[in-house]
Length: 413
Image (cartoon, rainbow, N blue to C red):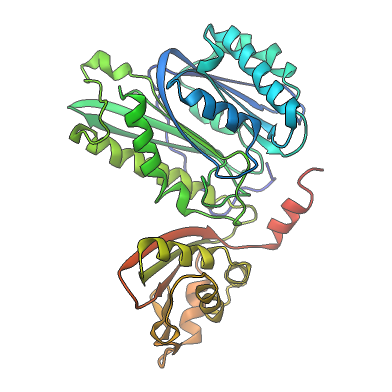
């Protein structure tokens, strides 16, 4: 964690309520740093339904492979997360480390290794000493408590400058249910599961198949619409667990993702995912500004998203934002290189409410002062009208500063 907290950090953190059916504990196992919490254990005393989405990287970490395999069972009793080492690109040793960690967790919690889920974040290519978990997981199982969300969020941080937490409550069939989530992520974040790591738990009673559909649909406009630096991590993991504790209040189990009873839950879940995703962007390494890039009038929503990502991922656009330079020519460049259909002579561009270009040239009433004033804001909106269709998308990013280079120039030291 770097010394100073991001200027885009939330002014206050959500008050995280305990959530029935899950307990948590953290420990300092010395994975990379001494005397720093680096292991998180989540325990589900009763089997919980589980869903997950993972990185699309072709070089995934050993824990991602492990989770994908166990997801088929649909049941979770324990989650072990460590920071300081990603256990990625670690070959046979990596696979052995996941198996040893899972065995330690299964023994501590009293379940099978097929009910354990793992996630690791940190340096790629360093072998992970899984024996360090064996010594702490037994005690953690005993110490685990339900009122521990904020501490849990702290334990999974790497270059993050603040813990990321969010909570929502909603109803299913007249019964109140709660959703709590934590996330970590600050760099190597691009829309192929953008968060590095995020764990969301609800006390609702929802079957794994329905849970998976809700999660997969919810990631599109949220975690898969944020980018810090266009780099897709080896380890990106987003998991959703349903403890089913609300069934004790009379909530009927929902097995069909299309069930109208899930309408409020779907909205609340998507809202929470968006909140966590934006907290990740607002903690982009070295970030000083948050940028929302909206593209309208593209051939399709997919085309709009590709163009928006081309703009959001452009180092030239991001450095112009960092320098508070209203250089709209860089936006034109990024639209042109996106590979999607665009008509130069129909293009219009706005910085905030200021239209800087229209019909393929500088706006006749363009004011450099007005455009520069927008660029001095902490939150900046860039909007592009393509003029070809009705496709629309919004992508969120941050500026690219000297601090980003400093953080990543000596990340391993």
